[in-house]
Image 1 (tube, rainbow, N blue to C red):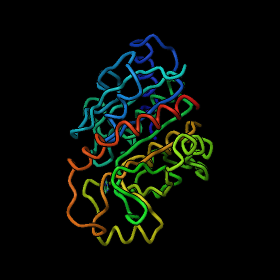
Image 2: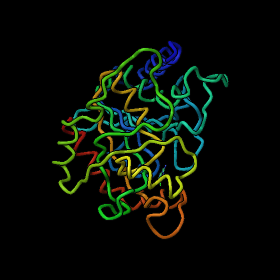
Image 3: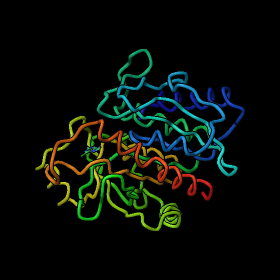
Length: 276
Ligand code: 6GU
């Protein structure tokens, strides 16, 4: 944790205030790959800008990770919607190409910016591999109940013994289940990537109690909890993980699953956000 990273987040929040007519925001959403179409279902943006116009954001590295931030008003809540995120595997450089003090800093910069802009509710979405094909199908949303942070990184450094007993808010999960009673819940295993897992690694993750696997979300959830925000996280199962189904994995499959589920995901998020 470098003080610089927090100063950059405050500067980015300040720029957001200057670029929009709002002096504070209530909710932040981070839309992962496959989720950008669902963001459109949240309604007309008040404003939208490339994140690179805000201090401290790395340019997007992957197709389908749009790297824009959108301001939306939803049932009286002012929402910051991040279209795309920075992943740990990008090894993203900070401003002026500097190596970040903590490799997690660029990954959580959006969440820290949102916290500095007043946000108290953080909604994280992602594309994930399904580890329970007997219960999950491609295109199913899974409410994240807990995580295994296997990234080897952490946004906190030093003796900051943050309690993570309820990393993912019981209250927000209940709201989401009310909005969609068919939602399943599961444990998200976060790995660094950028490779997908081997079949042996997938068997290991299942033994460890994981239900879905991906390359994001856990570090952002930790940063949000550090800032005292409540976290809701939803995975979209975009493929069945290696060795559990026929065939191989590719990024286009992940994006296509998102396009196919956009309306359902947008409705779910819209309902939850109008109640937080
Ligand atoms: Cl199978 N693994 C990981 N690590 N990330 C994913 C995925 C699998 N499917 C979508 N994202």
